[in-house]
Amino acid sequence: VLDEKFVLPIDVAEDDMSPGGVLSFDGLAGWFDVDFAGSPQNPADSVVQLTTAPDSQGATHWGQQGFFLHPVMAVNSGDEIRGKMHMERNKENHRLMDVLFDFSHVRSQDGQEYVGPPRHAPYCIE
Image 1: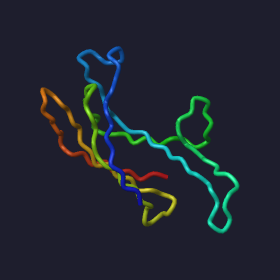
Image 2: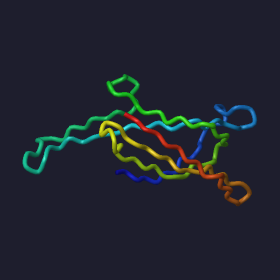
Image 3: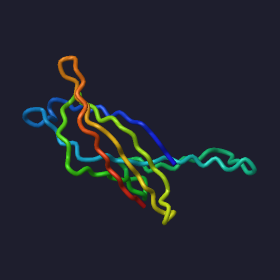
Image 4: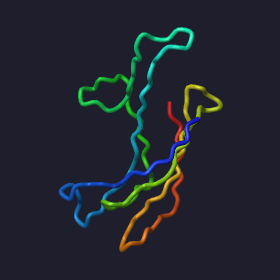
């Protein structure tokens, strides 16, 4: 079981903004790193790391995981997405993971913080 809180700042260069400064936030991407260090009974001589992170050379045979949102959210540079991610093994199929994102869109304006309605996004991934 993995429970992680997150804050994702929306930080986009002005040249990349659409007219009016509004962006579509339509998903999250995920990947993992694993360190193989052996066991206490049989430790490895050196730790080997396996990563599925994006790589410009395509050095991983595993892909990253996309978590697409529907409906998409309109955000501005300077906004934040705040929430938590919960992940655990699927109870019926141990090869699957159940992932749940609970989050809100947060906008700061004129010294005030405005928190949008909570979003609940469940996924089942392999």
